[in-house]
Length: 555
Picture (cartoon, one colour):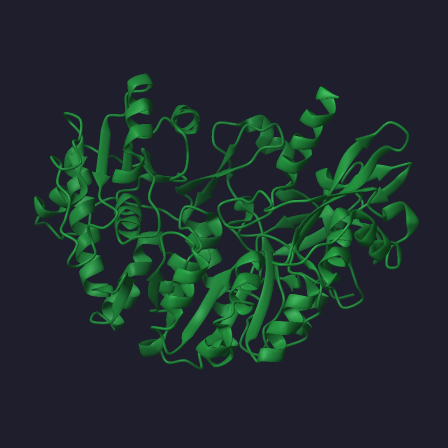
């Protein structure tokens, strides 16, 4: 039997295996800078920077960092939103052989302290709006090099900040002053190998302590090529001169880092940089562009976008070429709405530990609604029993997804115990439960840790989410397991209603009763103004569970 039956479902342009070039991540910038030097690499609030200008800025910043003493293997924290300074700092640090530590700009001083201690960060590139947290951090942990910038410094007509205007501490450097003070555009003479670490990507730990996934240059190059060749069946129909990508997924998140920033370099695409999400601002921005070649995003943003009152007048159906959804399951209703509009669409699955990728639906070929698709080239996927994780489960039976291939991280930074738990014999144990059908398509059932065991029954909250989404009054919904004295656990639904409508708990429960087995029906319903979400719009079930636990303790 063919070991990889899913290959027959690949799009015509997608290879079953890839020859990966011996490149370091920063070498990607050389491709568009050589082929399209005068094309806009970035557009940021109307200000453009060409690929050639970006290359020169990167080299000057790299040489400036080198002169400050940044060496191969050192950890350089980048705490920036999506703005020109991020790719400049990112490719500059990598070209010195330094390891980029991706930091969420919203981190508190305590969260920064935790990541700085865990990684031994020697350099931090940050920006004006978070300086109070950085000052608090540096009082506790000395960071040898702090470099700050103004978030509007690269917007023409705004006037650039200075070390004085930002009131930088003594010894701290100003981003633009470093570049201006370093005329050298020579390539740093540092040997960077594919197996060298490129990124430390923090991911939420089951214990609440984040773990730093170490992604090598080879991991990032493999992910960039896999993502590019997966989408090539339709993307390549748009000539490189016209290609662009909506850069709203944060670069500090692995999804935005690979599927937006590094993808854009390899595909010579202009990045439309959006430092924060505001739906009305986004609709205004879309009005300025005739077409968007590639729009990687998350279900909550797609939902807001295509159901916005201005969507029809913007003619989104003609404007958007390829939508990609990841990070959370996409409701079936929404997928059908996108396909009705004639927009190409792909939904995929991956983790920080698998360099953001792993499994996806083909774009032109057989796409199964509700499925995350089939494995990417060179990525082997098995579904194994939930107890020992050794035996492959029969077709149609739920099993844990395990993956092996060039996307899988080197391990967790300075954490051999967690690494040994997550990676066994080269297989990454994802903690996600799925079933596989006769065509090799994979359907996520749920997170292992989200599974609810009520009265001996296994309940997968995602199945309940899908039913709740079908209710005409529901805008957003999520089901969570809560403790129950009789059943051990039971299901609670947290719901955000559409504007201007009302509903009762009984109405929602009755609706679910018609579509779900009795043991899966939510016993309680909470109506909320909003649901807690991660920075990329993923609903955080664990926060809802923690709120419920805290509430029950008080009773």
